[in-house]
Every structure is written in C-alpha cells, then in structure tokens.
Length: 258
Ligand SMILES: [Cu+2]
Image (cartoon, rainbow, N blue to C red; front, side, top):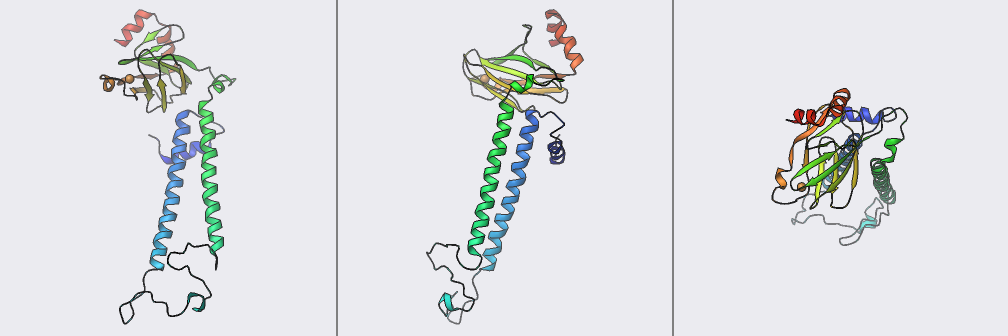
C-alpha cells in the first residue's frame, strides 16, 4: 500500500533509487492530485469570497437593490466599475496586476505540467536505458502472445507458459503481440499496459518490488470470452527461486504450474 507520504519520500530520493514505471505513474498521480486540489481550493475560495463581498446590499425604501446614486467615476473612491454587459479590462486599482499575475501563474503551472509529464513519458518509453546500467542486470525479455481468450508467455530460452513468473527487482521487458484480434495486456498493480495487435510488437517494461500474485487482464474488448481473460496468473518470485524454476526442465515446470 502506497501512501502519499511514502510517494513523496521516494520522489525526494529519485537520485538514489531506480525509478520503475510504477514510481513514475504514482508520482505523476500525486502531483496532479496535490496541484489540482490546491488550484481548486484557491479558485473556489476566491469565488465564494467575492460572491459574499459583492453580495446585494439591502433594498432601499422602494424595494430596489444596488441603486447607484452617483455615476461610478464620481462615487468617491475613483474606481471605474464595469457596467452590466461590459467586459472587464483589468484596468483600475490593482486590476491589471491581478490579471497579469493570475495569467502568469496559470501559464507556469500548465507549461510546467506539460514539460514534467512529457519528460516522464519519454523516460518510461525509453527501453534502451534498461541495458545501460553497469551494475544492474539486463531486463528479462518476455514475449506476450494474446489470443482469444488467453495470454501465453514465451521466455528467452523458449519456455512457454500460461502464467507469468518473474523475479522481483529486475526490469521485465514485455514484447506484446496477438494471434487473432486486438487485445490489451495489462497488470494493474505493476502499472504496465500494452496493446496486443496482430503482426505488431509493442514493448513495455515494469519492475516488481514485492513478491506476490497479481492479475493479468485483457483491457480491450476482444470477443465473447473477453471477460474471462483475467485471472491470478502473474507470480512475482524471489530471484533465486525464479532462477531455480527457470533452470528446471519443462516437465518440472509443468508440475509446478499444476
Ligand atoms: Cu482479449
């Protein structure tokens, strides 16, 4: 379970830890959540504040509201207030500055988010970096073949399984394709998802940080059996345990799978 606090800590420690796509997406979500909440609170509070500040005054003796006895320019404070139907220009006491400041802040936030989100996107999309690390293991490349209505996993040594067994703490590079119609391969908890399209290979990578069993789900409506294309078939193992399994014979593997 990841709390916003732990995400913040991990965010701060980016330089040290290797960033998995799960880290990236969770941080992106956190940034949008915090900024969105902040902007929402500011905008709504300011709206409510002004609605209250400029509320209708009490009616006069004849029951009329907001009757201006003198022309706006001459009512003492020197402020030319917009008339009904007039678009505010931001002129007058502090108006231009307010307009400028609010536009600038909005532009900085929006442009900042675009640059930030796009740089994360480039990072996640770049699978070449997985081979660059000198003291890290190369990724485990697994071919994911979708068909109506199941996924099949092909390992580098030719091992073919119907459940995805992977070691933790090692990048997994999946090469996703389909034998019939379009599917979409995804594991929610590991924040990985890729289209499975006939005659096409789509790469995606992820890294599991905890052992356990996860669900691989088809996220593209692919036929009458689509809803059955899900199940607890992703098994994250300790690296040694995984190596033992991977080095065992086909027959032994079949036995483990039951
Ligand atoms: Cu499917």
